[in-house]
Length: 520
Image 1: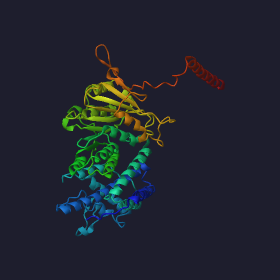
Image 2: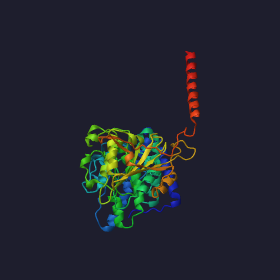
Image 3: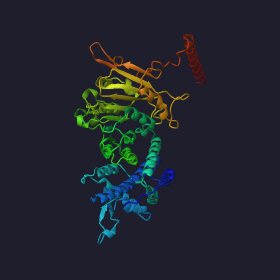
Image 4: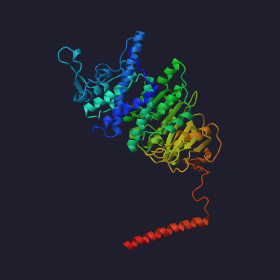
């Protein structure tokens, strides 16, 4: 039976914080790592393997109790317990060779007669795992390590990191809970360090708000086609966990409810670990491009109940992906391609599917292909709400103004409600150091189920959005409709004052030009 650790809940968080900090401090000494953007992935794959071994011990014990054979995901000598669990384990150049090399000498000579045979190195072995045994987790591990490279170049420092992580108990609920929180903090730090490369980050309060108003229910399928590090999936999982009452409910939640897609290797690894640390047994994340399927071939069996996502925007897809979309709606803009995918993936019956997505302001007002897509959205779906976010919500990654679209497949749109989130008093925008807080969305949450027009909320008929010419051809589909109660900066100034302001500015320009000419 695996040893059950007893950990004081009052000291768990403090001890884990110290352990993780020590591991990261050690990594700072390794010249192969470049800041948190390298340190977190390095720490994650080490934690991933320790986590798997702790879970394997639990499952092995459960199989013994049932009198059933146990087939491990990872076999000797590649299990954490074989090479990492003791301080006298592999270190230095031997450790790096064991992890990095395509082929190594079997480090367990006692298991062989004569000269030990050559076997794959650790990463080579993990990448070659398959699910021929029927255990999908083997394929997940293989996919994770296809995108992982060990960037630590000092085997002794790596040994020290492994020793630190070995002190974490992934089979103790208090530690798992605390680690989930710390991991989210580390993800945010890494995304801050990533700068413009942090496009897969959505502020936690925004994620919480979108899940709260979407209200996913146990028995529904929740999907994020561009899940990044798994923020929406984690929040949906936590929301649905509160609804579990039976063993059958638990199985449904862990194996039939939460699905995602993430094509980039690094966020794929981080998402897997994020979901595992929050208690999900076997995350179902597709490691390939969610846009790779021909849109018209997505049928009812591939549709889902709830989609929560912040799809990438500003990027461009290659022609092979673009060709998967209808000829009159083909574009390289990722946000528009994902919007079409989301519309196609929503279930029609027996209960209409619903979606909550983040889009840039350009999607709201753009014409051309964008207008055609929005026309379909309004005619075939009920776009019931647009929440307009204030400046800086996604700082420092982008200053582009963003919006939250909420729609379902219940009926064509009749009226679109708008709600404008305002900045706190005396703030011009959010920043990295002063981000949006969940409490600042409380008024919108209260309004959600009791809608009335106000200085922040207004509604618009779909006839005021879709404009056609006399022959019925679409002219525009502008969703970028400003708050009608918002006054411009000069709303209360007299015409005489406006003219005076303009004249003063013109004079300043003339004076500056004269000064420049005088210096030539």
